[in-house]
Image (cartoon, rainbow, N blue to C red; front, side):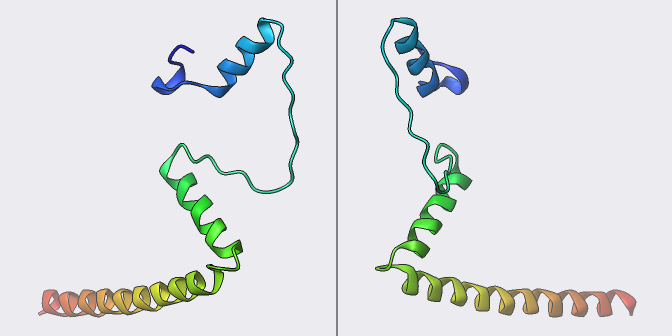
Length: 92
């Protein structure tokens, strides 16, 4: 295949080439969530979904996310307190 859109080899281009050359192409419609792992956000979402749905990792990963949330709230509180301190200095 030639390089396609975005400088990548495109699966859709390969399928079209097969069809145009007379090959049979089959599709399967599945139920579930699909993520575009060709971009960083899609890859992150896919990994998070996998971790949360996998019995081996779900509890551990959920606890990790809860700890991140606690850490974030502490950091957010510190940032708000610092912001208030700075504004009181400005008012002097």
